Image 1 (spheres, one colour):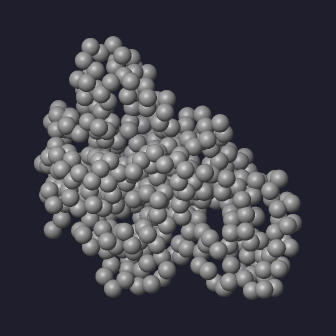
Image 2 (tube, chains in turn orange, red):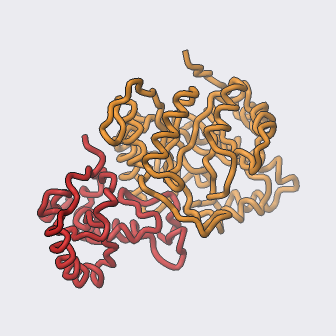
Image 3 (cartoon, rainbow over the protein chains, first blue to last red):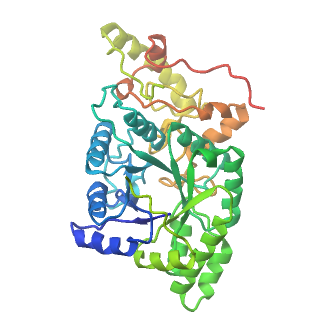
Length: 289
Length: 135
C-alpha cells in the first residue's frame, strides 16, 4: 500500500515534513510527484531525500517531459546514490497544461523506453553502452489507465511495460468499478497480474466540485454517475468523499490480482490515516535491509 | 536486447546529397498521405500506416494516459488521439501484433534525413511489409 504527495511550490522543506507526518506508520511507501500537471514544484529527488530522512520509503516519480536521456540517467544515478531506489516511470503531462505553456517539451524517451533504460542500468550499463562500476538496484514502477480508450491498446501498452521491466503498476484513480473489473479481467486473462504487482489508485474527493472538475478537465477519467449523485446529495461532502474512498478500496480488494492500494489524497494528505484505518488496511513495512 | 537506435556513422557528403534528393520524393508521397514529420526512422509499417510522430508528445510506443472516452487528444481536444487512429487502422489491417513491439529510442541525428536511405544504408530497421493478418 502506498500514498502520494506533491512537493510544495516553494523551497519550504517543512511543508514536506508536515505532510510526511500524516503518512508515517500508515503507509508502506510514498510517491513523490515530479512537477505534476507541468507546474513547477520542488524537485522530486530533493523531496524524496527529505522523506528518507523522516524514515519513510519514497517512490520517486520520473517524467520524460523535462529531461533528455542524459539528464534522466544522471538524475537517477544521483537518486540511487542518495538511497532512493523506487522509481515510477511516467511520460508526463504535456507542458501546455502547466504554468509554463510556452516551454519546450523534451519527450526524448517515453515511459516504456524509460523503464527499459532503468532495467538496463540495473544490469550495469548506461544507454550509451558504457558500463557502470556500481550498478543501481532500481525497483521499477509504471502507471496504467484502466479507463482510457481503446481498451485493447491500453492492455498492449501495459504488457509492453511489464515486458520492459516494470515490477509494479499504479493505476489512475478508480471511480468506475465496473470498468475497473472489466480491465482487471483482461489483465488476468493475459496473466499480467502474476508478472507485476498491480496497485489500484484511490482518490478521496473533498467536494462535488472536485469530482466534476475531474470529469470535465482530467482526460481519461471515468466517473460512475452514482458516485457523482451521492456526492451531490451528501450533506457533509468531506465525510461522504472519505466513505466513498473506503468503499472503493473494499470493493477493489475483493478482485483477484489486485496486489495493493495506491492512495492519492490530492491537497488532502491529512485524510490518509482515517481512510487506511477505516478500510482495515495494514502496512507490511517493506523496509530495506 | 538493444533499446537504442545507435548512431552508426554520420552521413557523408554523398549520402547527404542523396538524402536531400530522396527526401524531396519522400515528402511528395509521405506528407500528403501520412502527415510525415520527417523523423528519419520510419515506423509507419508498425503503426498501421498512421504516423505516430504527429502526437504532441511524439510517442512511439503507444498512447499516453490522457486519451478521453471518445478518443480525443488531451493536448488538442479538437482532434483525435493519434494512437486511437493507429489502433483503429491496425485493427482494420490486421496488424495489431506489430503494436506489441517495443520501439527503440529514437536517434535524433536522423531527423530531416531520408528514412528510405537510412534503411538502405543499414542505419535503421527495414519496414515490416508482409506480416500474416491477425486472427
